Length: 71
Image (cartoon, rainbow, N blue to C red):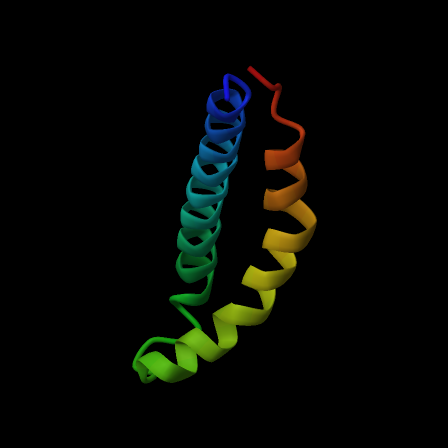
């Protein structure tokens, strides 16, 4: 069972990297979209932010998180 601990740490670091990357990406997107979407309902702003968020996660955040050095 000694291998389980490093695997858990690797998954935890990957999860942490994804969370930080998603947080940064959504804040940048909302900052850029804010002038365009002033006064819009929340569902409309979310609908506009989701497609670039998915593209950014798939092509930027997840590949960068996978390239992190292993412990």
